[in-house]
Image (cartoon, rainbow, N blue to C red):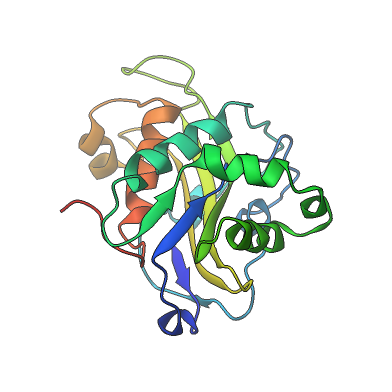
Length: 215
């Protein structure tokens, strides 16, 4: 699922700072919406399907810890795709992190406000920030897993003036062949969380409204 702000056409985004993703260490959410950063009212919902599971396959109701390496893993996946993205210059997360670490004022701001401030300090048009809300490794092998892998994250692009321009969300818990025949046959195996995250990043970036990826 992706959302774009009505103000998006007024912005020329030619440079983006990729900020290191963060993760929820011990999520207490009871439903899918609680797992993600709040989305401003100015951002409208798009009816784009990105392999988001049906309502019956919502995010886990119980508390699950997100491993510490998950945020870095998803950050690396986005950087791997965006570093050669055409039509927009993307700053590496390492460069963005140095600016954020040197800015103590960001501790008192919301993630979106801190992202906008980082964009200003880096002299770019916008910043991309993300939150990993679910990252569970499969228990088992490619032939059988219980539980299977699950991955969830949200990514946002915030302009240097603080306007949230675009939001992308992804969550998937791989289901067995008996529950999702077509989806399972696409992979022919129970994948790892890393493989599922890679798929999710690719799906989200299909609707990325800035520049364009490799065709």
